[in-house]
Length: 340
Picture 1 (tube, one colour):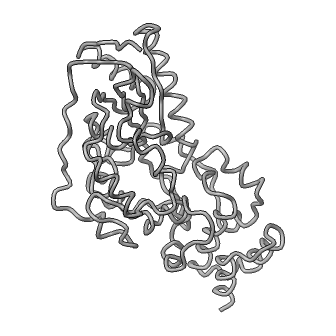
Picture 2: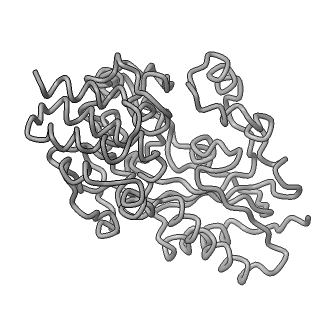
Picture 3: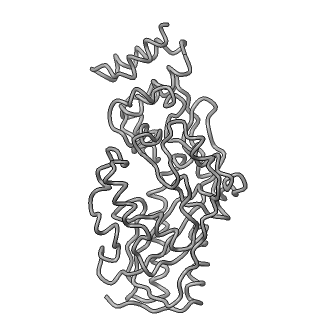
């Protein structure tokens, strides 16, 4: 595959074009190797990825994305602001999970952007896009592209946008003598994210997924770890605490696409009425759909127990009769708490 050499002026033009496709910033990487490969390998070796075993696959490609497809030795990296104020008084749903599933949205817009670039650069322009899929360390590439720095909360933090950003990566066959200016780490002596984590999942620049609430109520399959039931009862989907306390997010702008993050309002009593097909209908096009129905209901029962919603006891009991032949530990705990 032939590389296409472009000028610094052409790169600047492409960055401007990215905004027309809804991206808030854009940068390029012409050396795809991560800055700290040993760090990632040690993180895996220490088991801090918990049960997310897919991260162990294709490790060689994660450390050398240029090997994914011959000739694609560069990456165009984009970020999109999703900071918004949608939320529930009684439920905590992470900001990213509102609205259309960002995987679908970013893939669609990256495809449109790349096709537009192909029209400008010619048919020899080749690309492959990734949005939290494939053997790509997106945060490392975003940092190398000058879009921010990886902070102590392990999120990419942009001076202009904060850390509530989606990241998309387009591997391509562009080449340029110019390189992006990296953004210096500006966390300084701040440790608010680490100090505020209710499960001590964070150490500077590293997360232990086995302690992270977002891992437990999204990624983990099956019964939730009982030692976290109390704090899980404050979070239905995900957890934004380590980002919410970050000073860089205090002055970050809200997304211009706020209307896209409006969900139909739902309450605990309504969630208890959902059967599997209704769950798919309501959340199938959102990122919440990553959680299996039964596991989502585990989260619901922990919230009901934490909030001591005795008025929902009959509905909780009725849910099991309609939807589950076996006793979920979280359901049993919820019933016991409500009967106290």
